[in-house]
Image (tube, rainbow, N blue to C red; front, side, top):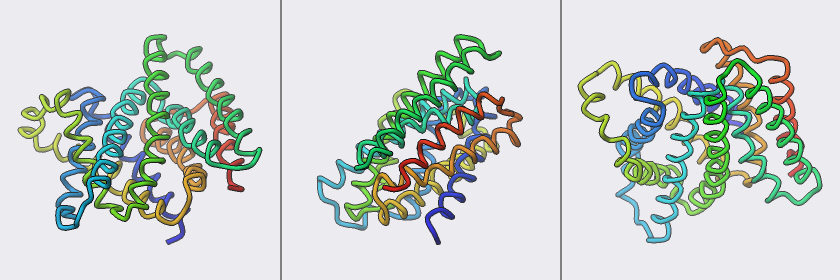
Length: 276
């Protein structure tokens, strides 16, 4: 399957899962839903891949574990962001991470200029958010969380490439998710009695885990083995439009014209790195 087609499937499932997750925030809180997404995805991947059957070096295990902790942190802070910001806006601002990776690993002037264009789009989106009907507290918390998610996403790409090229691939993803779930368990595992005694809630969390973690991250590992980090970041340009579409259709978060302008700047920044 061509890489763009993989990313289309990845984007649709990723943000469909996010839309389902938003409906669970009132029950568990956004950070806890983010942790359960990783924990249940880890269970699914362990049952599927059974990574203990392969021979692991200490270096591979450390790389996979670090990758998983960064991945878990990215999920938790991103869900905090979408609890306070529209989905499309949060995704667009989070793209500072991949664009920064493309700018650093690219070799031409376009990659360097792309980070400036992306930053302009983020400033516009942040300004629109602060001046919108969203409370200042929501805006500040949401913007802070999504900038943290952007930094984690940059780390996810770099570390994910190392895991993919190390040969462990999806097995490394399974180990990483276990490490991420364990690392954040002291903060969120207290919700376990509530979740396991509520089958519908557990089912919805499983849907979120499969749609937003298992499917897209498995596809990421497949593609990361084929392409460089900069090109991987470029192909992620398919995701902002997908997030806006899902947010508008499922969550009734229709973007304003200034928000669309900011989204266009961010997408344009990603396209500017396509030469790499």
